[in-house]
Image (cartoon, rainbow, N blue to C red; front, side, top):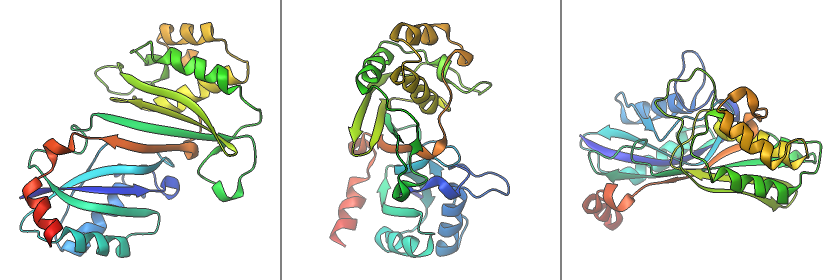
Length: 259
């Protein structure tokens, strides 16, 4: 058996997240059915992480195992013809036998999009707010996040995780056109963390919460102290980092390129 990575993207509006759930449409289930049909055998895929219902991914990876498979380029083409238009396959490529789409990821980057205007061509891909946030204050607050590692106050309650420690390497707001975009990068994220962090920073941006108040929320380690969790529609997984030089099966990849 050889292992392959799939590089893909999806609009999450029509799915109940990535992970397969009974009697609910998910990206994982849709991809597995397509692969199993095209390859004429049961195929299980493992994703680089979970995304919740309605969350989008412009950069996502998954892996699967297959024996005597020689044409990833043709499979990429066939998958894109077979899958619904809200899922796109960028590439399929061989990796080391022990490479893992989830556990080998070293960092993930998310972005959250908001606007105070109706954007008809961006429906389902941003969240509308009804005030003009102070981006300087929100960026000041975003830098406060970088001083901490325990993000219990922004984690969904009653989830089974061993630790709420996350190592942030980026947190900032940018004004892009008619939107404000929050970018956050970390080695890992807690469930619902980005959406609750965004809601809390927007409280700072509207003058409802002070910088010191933000510190108090973080240090309380109490989800009830933080701001509201923003809707899923504005959230994108935009980058997943890997040590690809260590994971990619270079000999097989070179052969694929020659073909």
